[in-house]
Image (cartoon, rainbow, N blue to C red; front, side):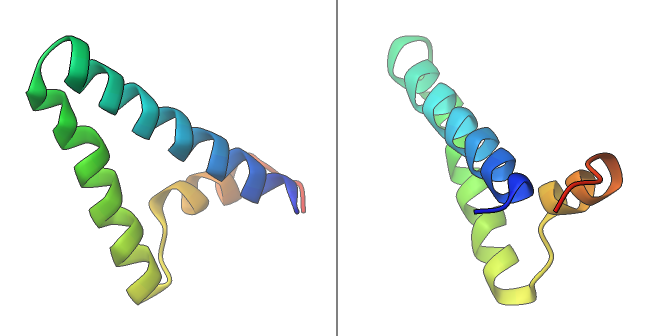
Length: 63
């Protein structure tokens, strides 16, 4: 697996886990974070454009 994909998966996993944990322990409004991320992933699958990959392409010059 290439480096950008691993970074992407790590960031997405951390944001989903943090949003779910904050939604459980702090305030249910935090559940909007993983929900919006899920919508972004759906949009990425349909259009082929991922904002995080766009940023990684600009900052990481690997793979």
